[in-house]
Length: 235
Image (tube, rainbow, N blue to C red; front, side, top):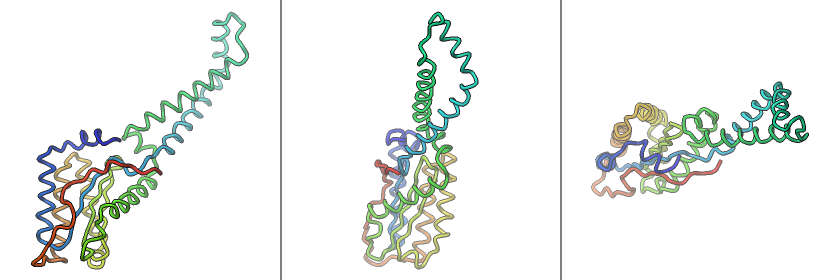
């Protein structure tokens, strides 16, 4: 899935982006914690699994065609007036299998099919890895009190990760973040994208406010808006 496709699927207006940004700012004003929010079209290139699906489909097509070899040969005999070349049947099989691989490979890029083809364990691993990578890239780990969290959504996989820095992990169990992440994924699945983000941000903000109350000086160390991660990682 590409950037433009993601924008269309999110159904978020400029006003919605501003509301999400304001929700982050309001949550951070009540705490020394920092909240980064990002969404990626997908967490990795899954070409290996898409190509594997194409090859499996081609093998199945070949198996199905084998019992019909005589009928296929008969059609070519009619076409060539009983003088069909010996290589024509193997060539037909090769072209059919190759075409099947290509067709299935490109159909696999449809998100709904991709989710079926890619093993769940692979999707979970890729999303977690991409979230951790963006946690580093975005500088969430560099806040003064190590009180930053990342809300990371991977759209194609329909998964959410909330990654907390060391200072937060010492006070708040990861189970709490996982509950918020699961609820957020469920809301996005229902098409309630803006509400999913704002609700998750508010709940994260409440946890941060309880454990990291604001100081007199409370600088904003991270951007407040929703970031769309355009690059994807090969896997």
